[in-house]
Length: 158
Image (cartoon, rainbow, N blue to C red; front, side, top):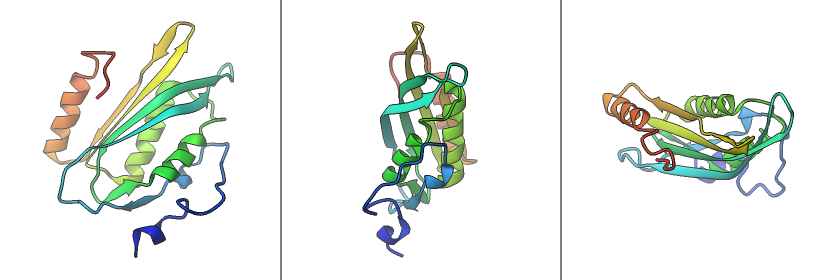
């Protein structure tokens, strides 16, 4: 099957937006370079969810870094999935962990990390991070190194 035939969101004409969390929006395509290790970085600069207590919008940037294995996330489906959080009331830490777990279940990557850079509320920014590696020791070492060093330079991500 061709890549184009695997994807229902990309190039489908009218885009339908969901206003409630929906992990089924995510789609994958086959990694054409499975024998190579390489980073894929996706930035969602206009991520929005709701505070579960005040119901006010929370804004931030999500940075998704991963080393793909067999499957990769299709970017339009990711955009629609992230948009589905717009009316979802969860704390920043919960949102980042939920997205991380959904992407792990979807792609089964070699390595994945997500950083949420949420804008200040009451003068406090929250920057939760999610880390995952598969069973291969090489990727476990990457996870360990990046986790240990994640906050050595708090202004820098990656």
